[in-house]
Length: 219
Ligand SMILES: Nc1nc2c(ncn2[C@@H]2O[C@H](COP(=O)(O)OP(=O)(O)OP(=O)(O)O)[C@@H](O)[C@H]2O)c(=O)[nH]1
Ligand SMILES: [Mg+2]
Image 1 (cartoon, rainbow, N blue to C red):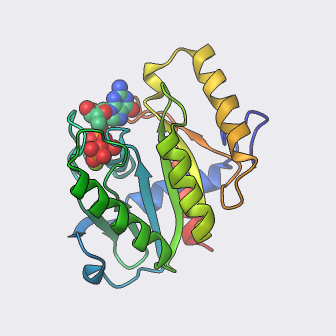
Image 2 (cartoon, rainbow, N blue to C red):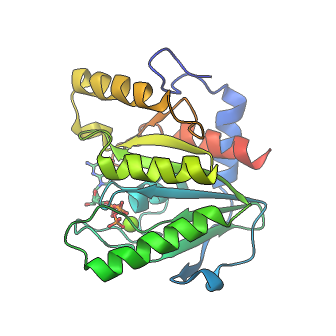
């Protein structure tokens, strides 16, 4: 499904793009924020989560996918999302906006609490079909991303990289980052080999990501 550089560009036939469009045209609502695992909502048939470093653009991507400007709260200050936020499309799909990691200024105790919540959630959620691991296209993979990937490899949770803020990088630099990401994914047992390149600001790659999620709901 991937082109030689590992991206999923052109990988989706028009039917898949249309299925993604229809899926995300459904009624969509915020279900609840969860700070402790015992508050998890009942499992939807398909759950998809968005993880990544603080400020990488998780909440913005969720808003771009759903076409709602302020469904998930975004901020230029890292550490905006502090809980697992569950959004549902009827009884078909649940999207989870996760708190970011790697934010140096977060209080240590709070960072530990988020990490434990993320770890326990990843390990104990059979309905979780895939985690989209967001990586800033300007910065590429950082140590904290590699730690997150190791955690998901260990928990056998399927994950796929989504490069964000592609509008902020020059094409040559983007190519270099894509090659580095494709290389890093080769040695990861739970990683999907393809990845997405997106810009929530410009709408790049959003239709393809919707199509990818629609395919996950059909499994
Ligand atoms: N240029 C550009 N800016 C973006 C894009 N996506 C997000 N941003 C900006 O990046 C900042 C962080 O975005 P958020 O969506 O709040 O990031 P987050 O990953 O949810 O952050 P936390 O909840 O703190 O972990 C905001 O100022 C967004 O406007 C993008 O595609 N392009
Ligand atoms: Mg957020």
